[in-house]
Length: 212
Length: 299
Image 1 (cartoon, helix red, strand yellow):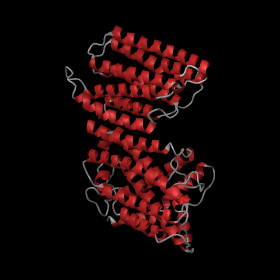
Image 2 (cartoon, helix red, strand yellow):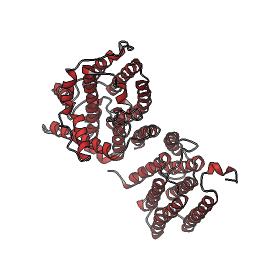
Image 3 (cartoon, chains in turn purple, blue):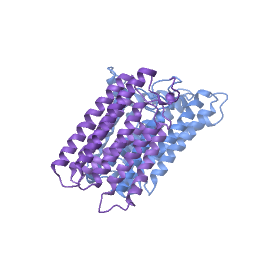
Image 4 (cartoon, chains in turn cyan, yellow):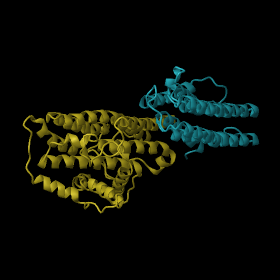
């Protein structure tokens, strides 16, 4: 039978590939929200015994990643008045193809990692894939908002790796990471508003000269 | 028994474009042409005279003949419902893809032969998009081969069971989406091409056959209808696991009609994509099919 875990992992891969290939920014924000909700559900799926800590962590991850961050980013989107990402430094088709090969590479890589215990290699592979997707988005996109989304996807990947590997997730560390990300997104939202107000655009390619 | 497949295909193939056009008309609020209109069109074109351009050589006259011949060969390879194909051997899907590719190649040569740059533009666009659609088709076929363990089209399409849908639904869904996008690209449907317009901006397939007339055009239209039928049969076979009751064949044909209505729905609800976005769509289809193959290996 198709397990819930394989369905969640499938959704994770699908959201990553969608982010690499899509140019509409509002759609990308919602895709990152879906990815956050999917990842928030991973501690609940019985990799490790269920405790109240896991439940609280899942709930806070789902609320933050699925609700608060997209809301903040959609607000910045409205302020910056952009609708679409222009052709990034690595084109959409090329980054989609690169993403696919990175997926295959990360599965091969993760199956050879000398991790202690009988960990699920597929989750670790997908965590690495998510991190590399986030990095690819971060370095190749032209709009500031897409770079923020890349940062969020990178954090999603790290969160996924933590949820998969740690037997007893240190509550303080995970909540600290979530708070970190929240402050970062909040700060980046304010920064994007200020950049847009000053320069009338958020195209990072044109920000290399401070005259705008 | 498999001869029934061939006879059904030959007689019912022009019905599919009729269904698609009728559903587009209904979605637009009109009554639309009758369902049998493609048959009337073929009959009308067969009675007309044919005109050849002065600057063209024999290629233009070769296009309809080669197209119909190749698609008659393709019909022998594709199973219909639970009836196996007339000719099946391991790797016949490669033959199918390349027969269709040869037909496309001859059409492109005929388009270049007319001496008009209009057709040449269509030929170059067609070459580019077909080159992108082919990996998607082959990766989807590879995914199906890995899933069912069979290497012939008949084996692959008829050995998909309910078990496969229960265990490997994401892979099958991805393969379906990839094959549907390849269907839209190969048959020159919106969002890849607009089959009803004759403006330079939007033509890909229609422009290659612009200079053909009379019985030549009738043969080319018939070959296009056969292509729609073949790809619709493949998609419907992937969509539903095959059954063994004698009522299966009418049910299968009904599902193909429903697929035609779905294509009409997709055509009515979308605009044609900008030409720089079509490669993204086709590479996306390829990545979906590749992902399905990857999921099969990761199980």
